[in-house]
Image (cartoon, rainbow, N blue to C red):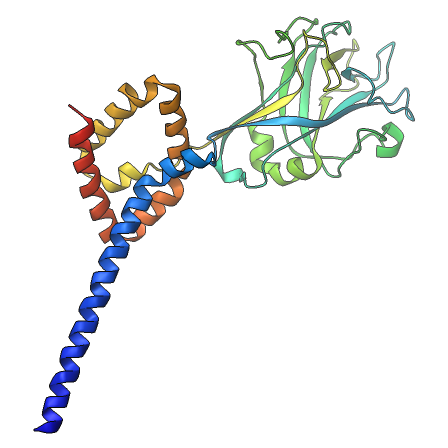
Amino acid sequence: MLNLWKEEQLKSESMISLNKMWAKYNKALSQLVWCVLLLPALILASGKAMAASIVCEDIADVSIDEWYPDENFNYKTRLIVATNKNIHHGIARGLFRFDIPPDVEAADIKSASIYLSACANCGGGNGGTVGFFALNKPFDEATDTWSSLDGGDWDDSVYSEAILPAGNTWNQAENGEPPPNVKGFNITPLLRDNLDKVKANGIMMRFLDEHQEPYTHQNVASRESTDPLDFHPFLIIQQKEPICPAEVMFQGEPENLNQLRKFRDQVLEKTPAGRTFIGLYYGCAPKISALLSANEDLRLQARTVVKKMLTMILP
């Protein structure tokens, strides 16, 4: 009897222990739900998030010129591209390097554009079709020349092409800032297929046909320019929109999704703080969606909480 009593006692203690563990699990799960739902708000307070649109500033630029093969042109306020028939220059090429965040992945790039300003007081040029290529080696804007770079070492396996306008008034700045109607040159193929080299080494801009007749050239403003009609080169990378956590939570429940979208578009979108919150929320979306997708209990609890929230925030 004594042994039987001990066995029953052990079973009872085991059940109590399991119940405690289950209670702790549910408590932890509930806390995780709230953490998931409040994560965008916490990030909003701390000011940390991954933006869907990334502006990458120009951190180095210089042009190299075969007619002046040993001269460094970093002091110039313009970058020049030219063909070898130009009466003032031989072949000239422009080099850029941009501050691209290391966590940007090629697979996440929806589109990318480079923004250049005509050099207002550099005489402009005839324009023409240029190619943007990733460099195989980095350059030093303060010391490198045509000779030191041997004309430049670029990867021609993939590139993006664009047409530089003629003249010197296109993309003209307003007090040193890009105008509202600024136009970029699409370099999405280059960044999607050669992002690592662009990050590490930079970009070369050159005429695709450097032996064309008649000769051609064009000037663009460099980061050394302080002219209020010029702006410095920069990149904008648009990332692909992540899967929305709400779509994970409300699969098969379009009415709830529509309510959330209504709150986003009619309430949050109307204020600067709301728009910032939306951007931060979508910046966190991949991690939140992954958590919800991997845990059905978490997904169900999150859905219940959000439904209750909807009754409070929507009429």
